Length: 185
Image (cartoon, rainbow, N blue to C red; front, side, top):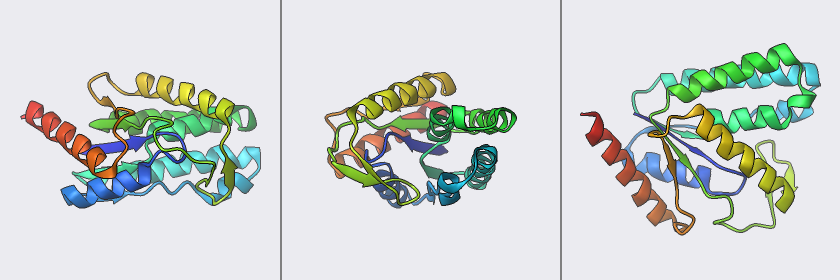
C-alpha cells in the first residue's frame, strides 16, 4: 500500500510521514525537492522537476508499502505555481509524470493549511519564507483543486483541522489505512 501526505509549508507533512512510517514499519520516501531548482534557469527548472518526479515515482514504486512525504500533488502545485517561468514542453512532461505518480497512490492525506501556526519557515532548499496569507490562500486553492483532480474521491482523505496533535494525527491516519486495507480484501 502506498500513502502520501500533501499540504502547504509547515503543515506537519514530514513529522507525520515519519511517525506513520515508524508506526507501520513501512519505508518512507522523503520529500527532497532539489535545491538546484531554486537556482536554475527557467529552461532547466522544468527538467529538474520532471527528473525529480521520475526519481520519486521510481522510489515509491520500489516498495509494496511506503509513506510519501510530499506527493505528486505537491510537485504538480510547484509546477503550476511556477508555470509561467518554465519551458512548456518540459513542463508538460513533468506534469504528466505527476499524473502517473498520483494514480499509483492508494491514499492521499491532505493536511489542513492553518492547523499549525507559524511566522516563517524554510522551504525545501532552506530558503526562509515568511507567512503570507494571500500566498497561502492561492496555494491552498491550487493544492485542493489538484488533489481533487489528480486523485479519485475514494483515495483522497482530508485530515480534520481539529486534529493537530501528532499522536491524534497518527491514529487518524492509521485508522484510515486499516479501513482501506479491509475494504480491499
